[in-house]
Length: 287
Image: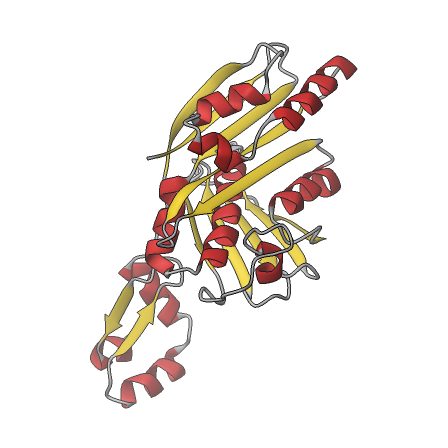
């Protein structure tokens, strides 16, 4: 069960959202059959999507994170709803890379570090909010932190982690995001800096048995943190046969007629959940 917890300091100046996303990242592994480094990268981005999605305000708001770093991963895409439910895809799930200089999975090598992070928020207005910034490192957490500092001018700390087991399943995954909400006193800033320095990695905390709630409150230690709310989050794809039919219609009658004339059924596969939809020639012909 993946769960997100949001907590606020007593004076309302600091928000900490934490998530245990282990089940979600295991679902990514199950669906996409990801290599360890792909699990780590997609798991981090999906975890960021859970947290950022949960910070949206309105029902039916949609968030898209798109990372194109120029690495062998291709483009990584995560979408999240306002409850933090996510789905994701990548260009290449089966990359195998040596460990990096720190002996860790080489996420930056898989993602690349010379491209862009794109953030799109669709809030139902005429034009969605969209921003693109250069990647800070390709390690994902640093890139999310840099996005908030650069595009939204919100002082933010983001930590993400995925621990892959020997059988390539996910042993632990999660993350937290701390945001300062002005006005913030210098004393509060000092507390946050000290808390972040003292906190082990996300996967170490999860492996030691800490819950998302305990991690969120640990980020606010000394500031009278209180839990605002918590709920379960899921890997959730909203594809359907009806939506797939709409996609086919968008090809235009001429293209559909050509497909129908081959007299062969076509298969449309969802990039996010790998579900396959089959259409017979007579179904295509009359779209």
